[in-house]
Length: 117
Figure: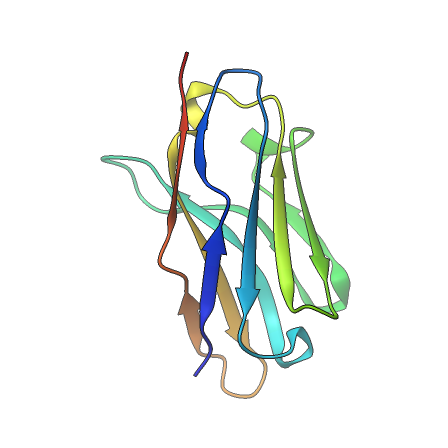
């Protein structure tokens, strides 16, 4: 069982920045994929950014050039730096991980990001 604990959401103005953190209860080296999804009201959950095996990153087209995913292997933490925020980035952001051993999916509790003036 893997626990994922997110932090860092909140309110930002358009053009502003926020940084999300996700701490995993297991070493990142036990994890195949780890990253962020988001779900806006009335919409399906969608990929934002994810680390794949080998350190390869994948971003949603809508956030490329504005968001950056990074990680601290020593702390088992993944970050999402969000710059140039837009109102359409408003959503609940979920940390996601899939383990190597059993390919189980794990989700954090979610953190609200609101972009509004």
